[in-house]
Length: 140
Image (cartoon, rainbow, N blue to C red; front, side):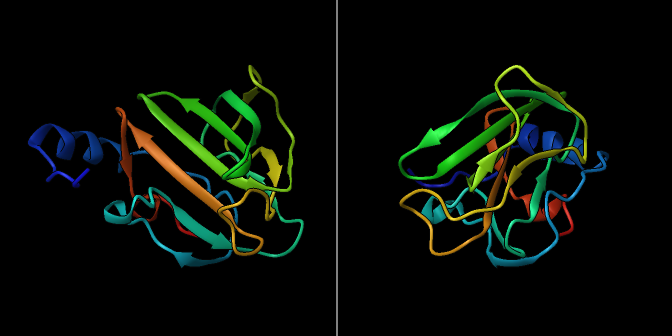
């Protein structure tokens, strides 16, 4: 599916995110950036082994489980119709229904799932049902 140009409504919704202060889930090196053309809807960050992954904002865990392709995955629903997704974790520290605060540990960085090439965090941000570039809002 081709990537559509941002409509005025989508530009406004993304502008509203720029007023939010996001907590960095890990500090590390970006090795693969957001690229919707190839369906890479997040940012890959390499950090130290056993690094703790932290929630980017307050929210509620809506998914915390294993998937074949992306390993241990945790998803958090935040205010403003925003969801953050953290993939390829070695271990998940929270379960569905848990309330978390920004900066709270939620997982341990890992190399789980078939679509991984080494220990890293793949983080996605979805706003109003659309993927947005995490690097526009978070300093890694």
